[in-house]
Picture 1 (cartoon, rainbow, N blue to C red):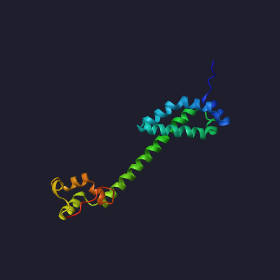
Picture 2: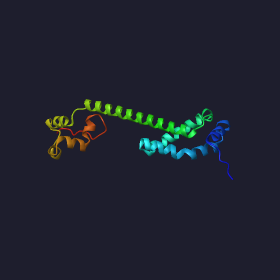
Picture 3: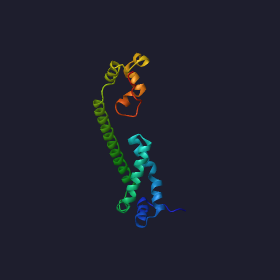
Picture 4: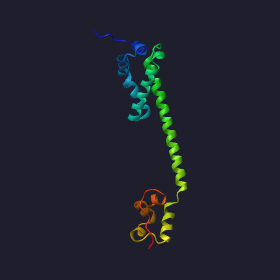
Length: 159
């Protein structure tokens, strides 16, 4: 008959002798709860997996301290919630910074139609490009990127 160790005993064994079996047993017991909590909180399985990995890494680092606590599962649940909140906050901040940066970049770029009128006035847009509208043509030809210093198609030269 197999011996059923408590979470606290497994954590003590891991903390004192780095017993890999004890830690693996703790992970097996709690991985569904940790992953499920993170998944419900974030809605993303890739992020939930990262959070679960982070929480179990924290468990390994804090094993000696946590081995004196009666409820390892409760600590894992709370750690998962807090890490999920932190990751969502960081993600939200990153998206806000990216959005602000993109808006600033757009302010520094000339409007697409103005670029088209400029090229049209100098005779640089001809034939089908001129008939379909400068903005659409510039986008499809990659000229906007080229005019902005990117690697798009070179602007045609006047003849």
